[in-house]
Image (cartoon, rainbow, N blue to C red; front, side, top):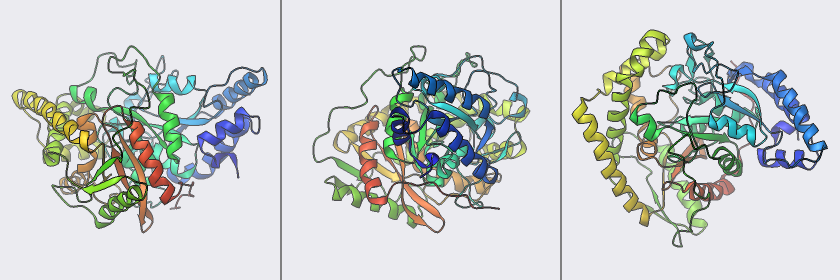
Length: 467
């Protein structure tokens, strides 16, 4: 087996024990990148020279007997919307192509501190605001399983790179599904962390963010194994006291009452759910039931209203801040997609916006009460199959996509973690579910994910479909 085929846990062990070098791991991964990336355009800035130099330094440190951090020599990627020192934080926007970061964002700094070697930057839509990963600066990222379908967004480059074996860990972020949706579309594992678990800000943007982003936007990894998601979480969550939201809490919480009860929601209220996605949720429930979990089809509180609140808060934030920037600096498809969203969901006045934030708090209380009895909730990741490329540039198409996104919006609205894992398949594509838990209980998501993974099999890298 070639080094690029290993997950991060095994690759780190091979490097730590001297069975492979960091330079060999980086070389193998870069070779894989050059073989598959032209077909998918997932990595849009390759840091080849820098990565090889860092690998040489890593191997020298091991030779001198230094204590080795958990990802020593492991190749990773970062997304183009987070600060990485000396590189542009372009976010897929042409006027930002020379916007160079002076220091690393905390999540990038944490990956480096853990010994990871960043081999490249992955693609995102302009301003990271679509579930299609396409922009005028870097071009379109293709789904390696089916080129006619989106690889998801906004972390679509990360999801496609994970699926094709361009390294084992790929950074992403999520305010409305941007880690979990690409994981689903590409058939890999994606962890949306809960509010405050990973320190999250860009030093290049000291002016702050809208309330919705503060409450909902988080960082998280894409991986091919659940154990790598656990490892990446531990690494990424190292603290940075500049982020007031960061939680200094253990990775492992107290065990819930046994047997653990799981609420499954195969058909998401408020719209269409594809039968293959409903079947995936029920299949995940059967896997967990076989492992001793108690599984029941039961609805958490006010799901449809939760979807409405996500839109009301976020579209109002966007209309007041990002929309004017998008109109000045965005690309045509991004502008059309955002205009279509604004056609479907209207921004609110101040009183309605404040009332929505207040109502969110009440909904959180009802969900936390529900989760005292049902510590895990399993939903489809998207209610429908991954949409065809550019499906969001018309109002009708965007409305269908927003309908499909219903289950993805609840975790960010409530600040909860969600783990996307593949379950089953439909044609060329994997179907998949997301596992939600209470804040700071990523461990419960990961434990359940490992049970599902044991039944479904570990994700292995695929060769991309060629155009």
